[in-house]
Image (cartoon, rainbow, N blue to C red; front, side, top):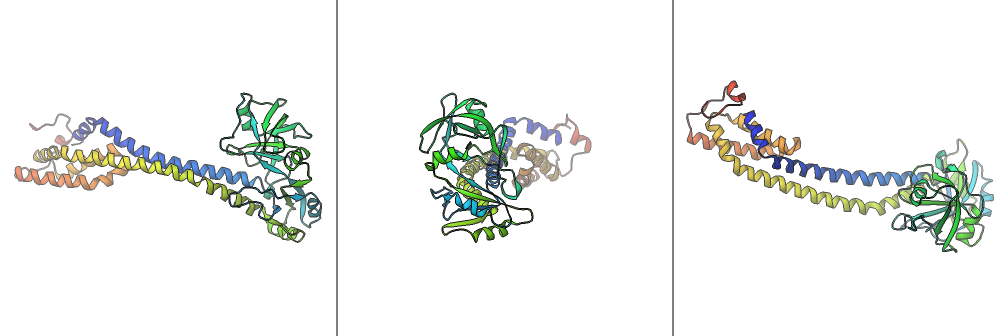
Length: 374
């Protein structure tokens, strides 16, 4: 019976390959969709964790539900006032803008079709819980007008190296500008998930995005050792003017990551729809395959019974073929219909050959040359 099962299985190679491919394709589509979206979510979570300080001071309603930054700013004098807070190790002002894109040497804009182009003033302030914030991996930080740093991926895509003149388009007062690349910088959390990062010195950033005003988008307050984010937030809040709030870095990063992950949820839905279609097609393919086999194998299995194969032998034979053609998971799904075929074939063979109720001997079961004449 084992020899006969192998012969039957190998005689239908296309069925074997198509059924296996349908299962592999459906499972791979679902697994790939979930892995891809989860990887994106984790990447943005790390980015947000490395781009917020222990305590973030910001204008109220500075970020809306779409995680879009408003035009509200904070005066530079507030940085000096917060430096006196008990438990504050340092206070740093940050100015950021979105819509600064690098033009590569080939004349193409880097990242303008999806991921944002982020511009910030360079600061070496640590992020929350002592995580490395902005850092220079090669070269140096920008120190004056006409100098910038780029993140490693953008510099590589654009084809720029330290010392090259970089062309950019911006959403600031200057629609386009040129600057010398003096270094390569990145956030401590790693990559930017496709976004580009350009850093300027503080004065240049204020000139480009705030018309030269001495203001900031946010202020980071770094906690001393032993001071929690919640404690420092409460102390900072006591000195803030109306219209300004202080939140812990954990809360600020969670808000930003949640907003981004919510915006990315459509990607997961889109991919899972295709994965569902693939699974449905695979299911219909397998059902159709086994429906055809039920019709094809009824007489064959009845012949086995007539030649003396027991019901258990026939059941094991078809389950063996099911496991070979559809994988281990499909064995249990296919067990019930194949058992029905076996019982049906058994009843047929019993009615036509009532005297053949013996089982094959061990030699007959395993002999490759076994035939009806034996």
